[in-house]
Length: 228
Ligand SMILES: [Zn+2]
Image: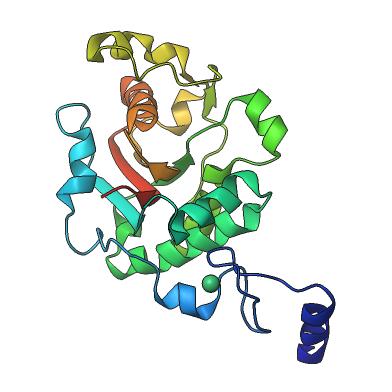
């Protein structure tokens, strides 16, 4: 069916989500040139303090892993923008699969029991039509064979009002952002929290505290991008 793909490319030109150049027949979402040159952090091979220190002194995180280096106006920002605002859930799955393949090299699947994408508030989920963190988790799950858990946690606060609060206030306010609705599904589990980008880490921190408070065994953090 290759000729058919080529024909479609002529009628409906597809473009690379990272650089905007036209995609060739065998390429999907990201062109070969961008794929080869993705700015990987390799945090699964070499510990990157600039990434892991975001949680130091706040919450115990066993593994802090980020696929790509985030830079403003760069290709990674372009990819994340497409994933979040461009109605491209399949891009999240693709990026998750790519990263999952890297993470399998260090056998991360032996250290994680379940993957949980940072939940969106139901209003936002309805607006966007999909949760980008779940799309990434789906790709990671496919590549590494770790199950996803989508129904144990819900988000009950629309926006993250955590940033301006002190650490103690944040700790107290945790219940107001995420709610564990099925404790049995997370109890004693080694959980990887999945999100698109790691910035201050405050939302992930809130989710981690909620999970730890309800008896999960261990927290890891896996994101597609991080400012390093
Ligand atoms: Zn490209």
